[in-house]
Length: 266
View 1 (cartoon, rainbow, N blue to C red):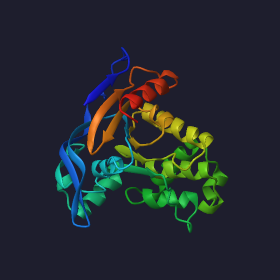
View 2: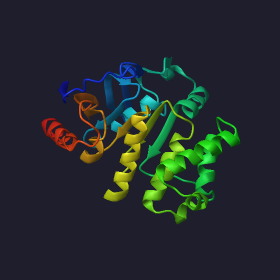
View 3: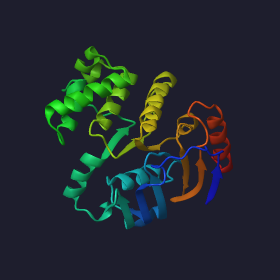
View 4: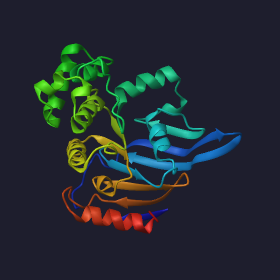
């Protein structure tokens, strides 16, 4: 595996050295018309607490499969996933579901807001799975203020939202339970450049506050917001780029990312 290092900061972060997710020989195989398709192959990976890890690679590389395995949404065929000290790959489906409610937040390319509920109620429905109504509403309003959705916006139904508003509502829903790790699968895939920038700036902001993020993306500019980029191809990690030494607004981030991807054969 190729590892490229950007200039490192002289600051020390006590959280950065703490592993929140580790995998041991993680493998995933699917059966397709009787043939075995090996999507992930013996991956040993560490996700550090407080990091912003980006997973990139060509179509079919196993990016989303890896994200689903790390979050407990899918089970590995072989190997293990340890999340916050717990080997979740050994959990029953019911226990996994309970674990995800309290430890995982999700944002997907498709936001999947319930049309019959207001924006606030969409968020409340998730939050009430783990906390009382008063605490959930307080947390929701804090997050809505952070992402710039007004009181009027919170009363709207999903069909009344713009693409950017829906993405911000999806971000709030994913963060409502104070997840240990926030997982994003192509979160800007259907947004224009303006709304993409809003979402990415928000992800950078919550990461700066200590939130661990794992994001899958095809977009170079989106990837440049991460602290670390993993390049996945044919089910294995082919290379890694460390961006921790560059400030979040540094334009060199995009240049370093593009150079790294070119070397990986992007």
